[in-house]
Amino acid sequence: MSLAKIASRASAGLDAPAVQVEAHISNGLPSVSIVGLPEAAVRESRERVRSALINSGFSFPARRITINLAPADLPKEGGRFDLPIALAVLAASGQIPTAPLLPCDCIGELALNGELRGVSAVLPAALKSRETGRRLVLPSANAAEAACVPNAHNHPVPSLLTLCNALAAGDLPPTEARVDGPAAALTLPDLAEVRGQALARRALEIAAAGRHNLLLCGPPGAGKTLLAERLPGILPALDTDAALETASIYSVAGTPRPVSHWQIPPFRAPHHSASAIALAGGGSMPRPGEISLAHQGVLFLDELPEFSRSALEMLREPLENGRMQISRARQQTCFPARCQLVAAMNPCPCGHGPASSQCRCTPDQVARYQGRLSGPLLDRIDLHVPVEPVPLSTLLQTRQPEEDSAAVRSRVQHARGLLNRTGPAGQDPAEAVATTDRRWLAEAASRLSLSGRALHRCIQVARTIAALAEQPCVRREHLLEALGYRAAGFAMPQADERGAMTILPATQPS
Image (cartoon, rainbow, N blue to C red; front, side, top):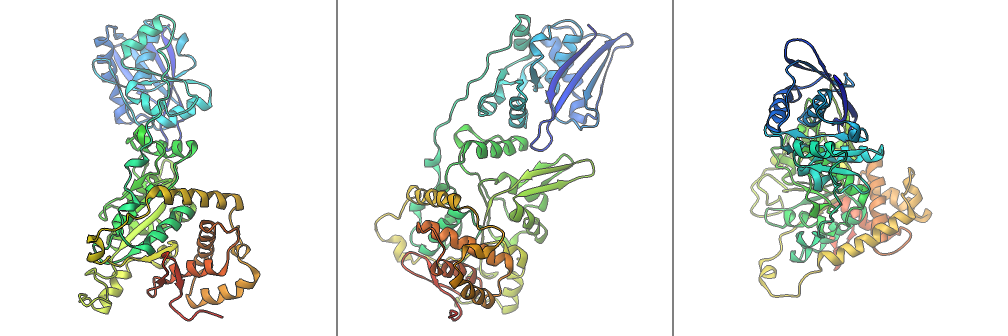
């Protein structure tokens, strides 16, 4: 037979569209032509396939070979089509049977000696093959990653020769069983290592329970980064669907998550020199950026005002709708980006703060420094928390250990269960507030000059505070604490022994 077809899958964002690899061998001068909108790496596959076939003991037809990657209008990239192209050439030249491959999708990059190398975007291909009831033939290097997809039929192979020997016997290589990795939550930084900082610890717990964005503001060495790095440790483990979606993003990015990190919420901390494309994602063939890699986890931006203005403004829409839409001339790609933003900053350029005797910044310098953050971006951050340095005597003295992450994570998980049972507040934020408190809340929001979005977010924070207190309805003390976190950007709020804000910077409305 001079014509053969092998099924494969391309990579397009988090999708894995089906691709039919067709090989036709005809008379004429020896040549290999690949059509179907291939990019450079796909065009170069003809040389890899030729060497792999010869070094695996097969003959490469000295005739005119045409390879078509259908559909023709879908861009093809990477070395994932090496294996299906080689199989199609072998089948068209009658060297292997194709019947066992009819229910299979094949992906893999070939080395010159015929071994198979791992490729990116394996998880979307495994998910799509499972969804369509097909099997997936892939390199052994991707076996552990693809095995995380439940109820999938994956056939990892180490080399082209191994696969062809199995096909000659009329069968496929054995499937790979899923191997669950050990629970790695114990390896995360523990909240018990933080001394003092009752207010920041309280805000961290609220942020974890309600998935709220958090801004920590304080002088250098106060513990802002220390606190932010401990947020993943108090977040509940991801369920199977969320873990698969998150792992698919990393698979597309070419950095698959280890099995031991499978259900741990991701933590991304890009340097402040990161560009807007690095944060949002992009490229001629769009790839996920840092905000998508932090999906279902935490995006930590240290030294927030030092990021470029364009990079920070790119975060506004994803923080609002939980997705990153990347538009290019040839295609549009949408990556999920529902993450928690945790940012840290100094109060002024020197870092000590205008209230400190060590600060030498002028009011204009402070205003310009804080003005690097736009109002719309700050409006999307629910909790503004001052972080004061812990006295050295407190750090050096021997004392009982602080509450650890496991205890806080238990409360966070319980609060999330209460929030899920009560449901969201809805489009009308007044539904979550008692009628007797609505006038009081309106006056307080007016004094703080809150926008409609900020008011809605304050009510959501109050609902989280009520859930942590195991109370079914929002009360005035919950609203007062939520407004206190918003007021932290205007004046230093007070905190009680639990770390909860209870006093507004202005006179409380009656």
